[in-house]
Image (cartoon, rainbow, N blue to C red; front, side, top):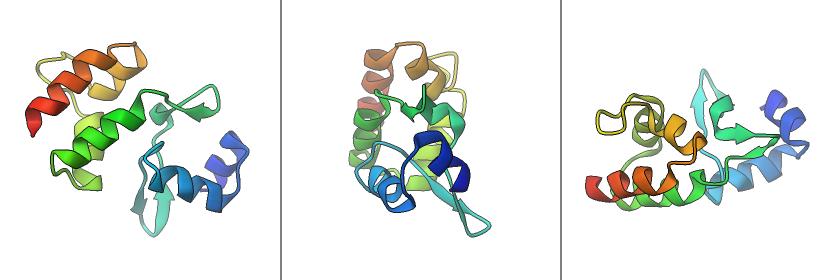
Length: 101
């Protein structure tokens, strides 16, 4: 969390709000809230992440399952979904996400 506060130049409560509002995805590891660096771009939450997080939630994914799916290689994409989002393949990622439901 301290690194995230510095990177985003936001208060801890604002960062928790970004997570609650699905602009970011974070999980606790050893009692510390953790957000992968890949979920940020230019000091801001990755723009295309939010819609994908809503789709994963609608598909019944828990926070941990969504995190694992985003960071693990997806066979149909050939890369991890987060890497596809970063490279601008939002539509393809969301199509696959909708099929998961």
